Image 1: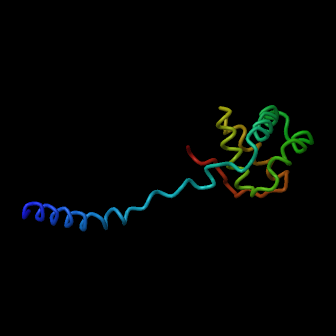
Image 2: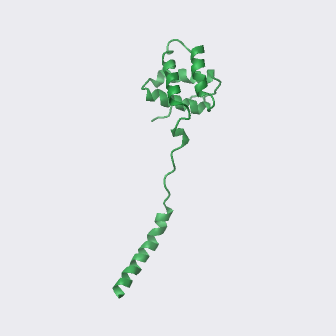
Length: 121
């Protein structure tokens, strides 16, 4: 009986010393909303397809008519980040398409931060 009481006492002491450590642990925060683009991926992909055909042509009415409705309603920075993600997902050249995509945001009435670059993956 004394052995059982001693073992129980040791277990209770161990629990008392480790429980605060377990209680102090906090889970990592959930992914930020920046991780998920608020725009329709299919429509944005179609917009990028149109933009990729304009590398040597420039922005005009067909692009504005097809792409502006897709990116309207979100902040220009969010739209730019979504465009970066979509360009990468389509395995297209960011160095060529990003300036055209940023020009599109400006044409659609947005303001992109100066010197904007797509975040590294």
